[in-house]
Length: 288
Ligand SMILES: Nc1ncnc2c1ncn2[C@@H]1O[C@H](COP(=O)(O)OP(=O)(O)OP(=O)(O)O)[C@@H](O)[C@H]1O
Ligand SMILES: [Mg+2]
Image (cartoon, rainbow, N blue to C red; front, side):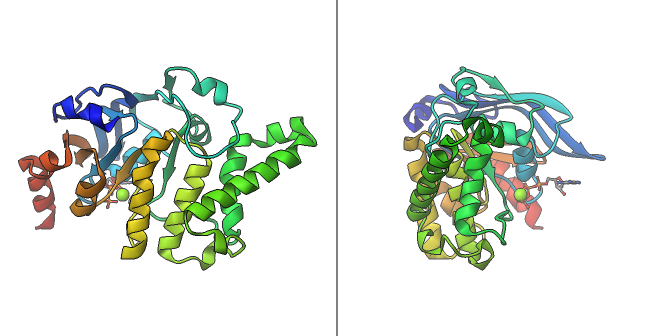
C-alpha cells in the first residue's frame, strides 16, 4: 500500500516493502547511445508511481524493454503478480500468475501481458478501422487465446458474450459506451487515450505501465483520467505512469522515479523528488 512507502527513504534503487516489479541491471544502447541503464528499481504494489525525466531520458525505452517490445542488452526483471485486477475471464495463464515470482526476461510481449503487466503507448495504438467495442474485445481475446476458443467449442459463445458485456461495462466506466459501434478512428485524441486505458483494463493487469496517458488530452478528460488512475490500486492494479507535468505528478503520485540519460538519478515522495537538485538540474540542463 501507498502507506507502506512512508517509511522508505528516497534514494535511487531503494528496496520497497512489497514490490510488484523488480528490475535488475537493465541496459539498452542504440549504437553508442546508452538509452537505458537501470541498476536497480523496485515498484511498490498498489501504488501510483510516476516515472519522470527530460525528453530522451529513456522512459519509453524502459517501458518497451520491460514489456517485451524491445530486447535488453543485459539485465533481468521479474514481477510478483499476486491477484489480478479489472476484467472478468480468467486467462489460461492464471495458474502461472499465482506463483509468487515470475521472471520476465526474454519473454514475448503477449506473454508478459498475460502474466499481468500491460502497457499503453505514448502515441495511441487503437485500430482505427475497428469499432471501439472490438478494440476492447481484442484485449480480452489476447487473454483467452484462440487455442482456448477451439478447445471450448460451444462454450466459446458464452465466453464471447461475457467478454462483450465486460467490455461494455468498461466502456461505460470510461465514458465511451455511447461510441461503442463507432470506428475508433472517429474518436478525439483524448477519447483514444481513454480507449487505450479501457483496453488495458480489459486485459486484467496487475501492473499497468502508462506512457504519457495525459498528453494531448483536454482538461475535462484529464480530470476523468486522473480519477481513474487513482482508483486502480484499490482494484488490484498498480500504476506506473510517465508524465511531464510536475503538477499532475505531484497531485496523484505516491512515489516518483526520475530518469536521466537512462539511469535513475532520484526517487522518493513527490515533494522530495521535485526539489532534488539533481532533478532540477536534469530539467534545466535540457532547456538551454
Ligand atoms: N529505436 C531507436 N533507435 C535509436 N535510438 C533510439 C531508439 N529509441 C529511442 N532511442 C533514443 O534513446 C533515447 C531515449 O529515448 P526515449 O524515447 O526512451 O526517451 P523518453 O524519455 O521516452 O523521451 P520523451 O519524454 O521525449 O518521450 C533517446 O536519445 C532516443 O533518441
Ligand atoms: Mg517517451
